[in-house]
Each structure stands twice: as structure tokens, then as C-alpha cells.
Length: 144
Image (cartoon, rainbow, N blue to C red; front, side, top):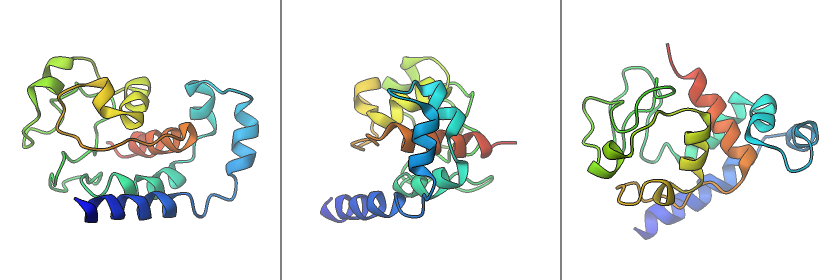
């Protein structure tokens, strides 16, 4: 457990590296930006780097196996708790209903336990809204 926490902290730190345009993108999104405004300035390449915090448990490549969590390739637009036929989702996630759209992914990435109490995903969440928008942009790219 301590190793996973330390790995997550390191990955979160590294995820912020290399985003030279971050301040510029935040200015373009405006003060107190909405999710839609952040998605307009989101950077899928930055999202791929920031996905590193997710990659401890998830793949996002076509045909890759489920690991600690389901492969997220093609998850965008799919029903919650049904995307991977190979992964054993919790009843809480299956019963939650809905689809993985931008708003749902944003809320989930921010605080999964708050969105679906009883989920098996033990992740504190990504607090930064631009980081979440970047990850969402990356996941949108990872589909057919």
C-alpha cells in the first residue's frame, strides 16, 4: 500500500512536467473556467503524460489486457460498469448507470469514491481541473 501511494505521488509530480503551455491554456480558458472551456484548451499529449497516475492500474491501448482496473481504450461514450467484458466491475458501478462522457469522467477522475460509493477503485483523485481535462482529451483519442 505504501509503495502504491509513493508511486502515485511520484507520478503526479512527474505528470505536471513538460507542460510549457499550461499558463497560456489556463488564460485562454478564462477565470473560473467551466469544464467545456477547459476541454477547449485541453492537450491530449499532456493528458497522455498525466494518465501515468492512472496507468498504475489501467491500460488505454487497443487490445491491452485489464490490469488492476479495466483497459480504458474506447471507454468514452460507453455505459458505466460495462466497458470491458473481461473485468469484474463492482455492483455499485454497474448499478450507477450512465455513460462515460466528459462530465462523468471529470467527476470520476476528481473523486471516484464520491461519485460511486462502493466502487473498488481506491484512488484519491486528480484535483486539478486542467489535468483532468487533459486526461479526458487523451481518453477521447484512445478509441476507434
